Image (cartoon, rainbow, N blue to C red; front, side):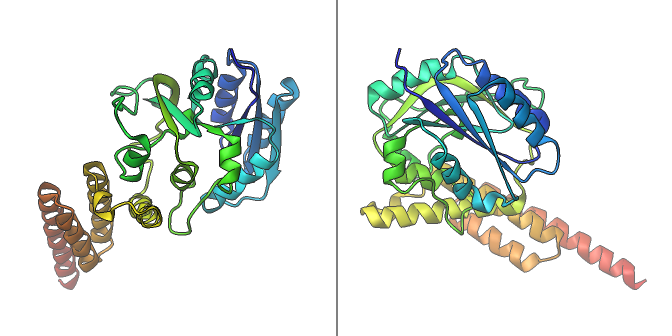
Length: 313
């Protein structure tokens, strides 16, 4: 069994209750050679007290605190955490998710023996009580899948909480990365770290889903469009045909995000903007969703017209 030090980087904000569970799942790892670099992004609850309580009981946990900066600065937060860490292998942990006890013990040998720049495993979706939700662990990828190309094409997403990253490769690529048009640090970082990539088809973590509407309509479209734009930029730099970037999964994600945005625009009375989103759904080749979108807008238009007419009486 390798004895490489794994640096686990965490950013947290107002997650006192869930943070305790996440840290417990780390402390209970059967692989003991790890450290946690935890950055409290200016929490207003007792998250900092929870972090310090764990640090006093396990010297491998190192908490830091800063003024609140938010999602737009997550790459900076993680780069600070990286600068405070010592491990040759980097892992990431969200402040409300859970690792299974063998997460590091099973994943680390696979990562090191494969010589991967980045490797990842599966995770199971659970509810707020950590009870499994319907569906098998994600992702499910065939052994012949070109992981980097499939990621570039948007065929799947990598669960952040199951990644292991070579520190040398991450630092060589400039650390964690984030684009001003994409409110996420993970996708740009994975594409920058690049190959060789490895996938371990084992469920090693539990990803907590707080609500089916966890991502707002606006942020869903921002994430989908931002990821596609970044993929276009990476493809252009590497000579990858842009025509191949619209995988079926990416088309579905973009169309779904436009549908959510159309619904929000319709609710706000911006029917022309909603029609623009419907047109994008049609251009993505999703006729069923396009029909649903138009039906929804006809209904919303009728409701707005009725309300306007009623106000004149």
